[in-house]
Image 1 (cartoon, rainbow, N blue to C red):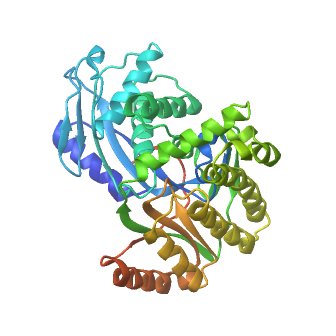
Image 2: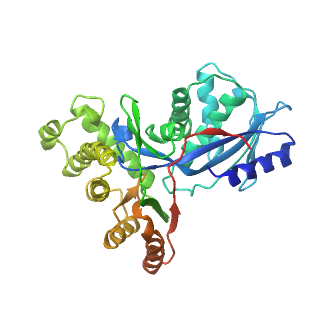
Image 3: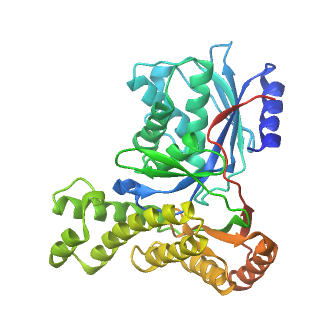
Length: 382
């Protein structure tokens, strides 16, 4: 939780609206392992982090609502509830999607005034969109006393992104942002939606992100193509998702699908297995095995699922050269961050070397973030 960020939105809200708001902290997330498995009803191991979205909000006494992005001073004035635009781009879409999903549940909330600000880098794969959605539904649940459960808030946020924003994402991001716990990863089964909090006592190690600063144009189209491939293979196997496909079922289907599609489906099956192995490794404090699994995950994302890029590969290779315990690309791919498990005593030299080498290779520096595993969405009391 970034208290300075929260106090800054409180100050902005007071300056603009003259009343004390309710203050919400909504975190981003990392995903330790389990990439491109969530939309295949697979296994994932995310964790909420100490970077995120701070939001100040209050029921509007004027009747009309007003939403403010404090960083850019962009303002959106929502219309009457029944006048939700059919489609809108930009950050307001995440809030409008939430309102639309509430309407489907027979809930018509009154307008609110809100100010938000975040410190999650855009396009870095840290789930800034889910953090926005979670902040808004969590805040509405508080000020309007909607009585929604944590799982209902996750479902509403997820549905908003799928149905209104139009991103066919899995449920991991919203789930991690609501259910996150300090010092623990969430071992989530995306089929049953059952989860277990896994303690991560990384006494001598630090999770360190390196943001490439790039997002290649293939990212969105490639994501959709891979999801369609996975769903097609599941249908051919006569099941609902790749989670229900075994290696023997996939091998039997091999003559009917392309080699590329076979490799992609095999990656998902192998990644699910790696998640289970990673959980066991963490529980046994076996960071050597955990690190190996991270590198194996990246190799699969690069060669089988084919969602990496030159910049990500460069940083993972550099981590390997420097003896970093584990590293892999994180997120949808074609840009964003690498996740690195680094000995605390080596973090500074690792960051400095990575920035220098990356700048020499690509002409601009990568951006480092040393993150802590933190609690999920919560109220802030100043």
